[in-house]
Structure formats: C-alpha cells, structure tokens
Image (cartoon, rainbow, N blue to C red):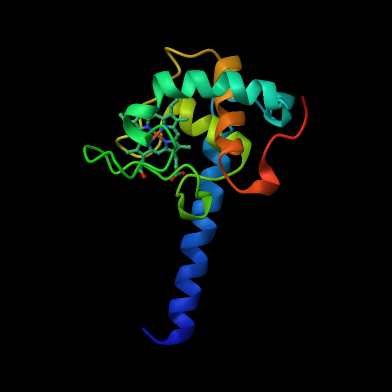
Length: 135
Ligand code: HEC
C-alpha cells in the first residue's frame, strides 16, 4: 500500500469507529446526556466506594490495572489508551453495557445513579482537566 492509501484506510477505519460509537451510544437504556453528578466531588467520593466493590478486582484500587494478571483491563487513569470512548457518556456505557469481551456489563447490578457516581470517580482519577470541581 502506498502512503496515501494507508492514510485513506486509516481515515475510513476511524470514521467507521466514530459512526459505530454513535450508533451504540443511541442504544436502549442509554441516557442522552451526561448527568451533572460527573462534576461533583461528593458524587465521586461515593463512586469510589462503589468502584472498590465492583471494579477493583480487575482494574486495581488505583485504576491502573498493573497488579492484576488475570485480565488485561484498561488503565482507567489513562483515557488516551482506551478503545471504547472517553466522554462521560462513553464511560457510562462501558460500565452499564460492558466493553470488549472481558469487561462485564453492570446493567443488572447497578442503578444508573450509582453508575454516574462511578463515572465521577473514574474522571477524578484521570486527567486533571476532567476532574469534578464542585462540592
Ligand atoms: C472482570 C473484570 C472487570 C471488571 C469487574 C471491571 N472491568 Fe472494566 N474492563 C475490563 C477489561 C478486561 C477491559 C478491557 C476490555 C477491552 O479492551 O477489550 C475493561 C475496560 C473498561 C473500560 C473501557 C476502557 C476503554 O478501552 O474504552 C472502562 C471505562 C472500564 N473498564 C471501567 C470499569 C469500571 C468503572 C468497573 C466497575 C464498575 C469495571 N470496569 C469493572 C475488566 C473488568
């Protein structure tokens, strides 16, 4: 493949991923916008306790998934390495409906409110500019 073709196919693959992302974001049970809780530090604090119960065994307590050897789980502190989208809605979707083959869905065990609290926690351990700032 010459370089132009390679660039074109990369662009097309990227486009397909974005379109698929939008289709899946429209799936049943998905809210159409992020809950304001994602800006709340107290929601993040509650989310942390839910995180430690539900997510720690694969993503580790600090979210970095370095110690765990059973699953190659995502490093939740580094959204630039993720595959399934990095916006609060995408994180919500990954938790509610699962991501890839090994990230289980939590739609049966966690209420949407709890999932948003966990999203706030995940944002809170990620890049500084996305962390909750309100009380
Ligand atoms: C049974 C192990 C397991 C549990 C429990 C688990 N995860 Fe995951 N998670 C994974 C794995 C493995 C992946 C990577 C999937 C892939 O890339 O195919 C993943 C991916 C993700 C992603 C998507 C990252 C990306 O690439 O876009 C997010 C966000 C996430 N997990 C958050 C959570 C949260 C929050 C919880 C708790 C509610 C949780 N996970 C519980 C194993 C787990």
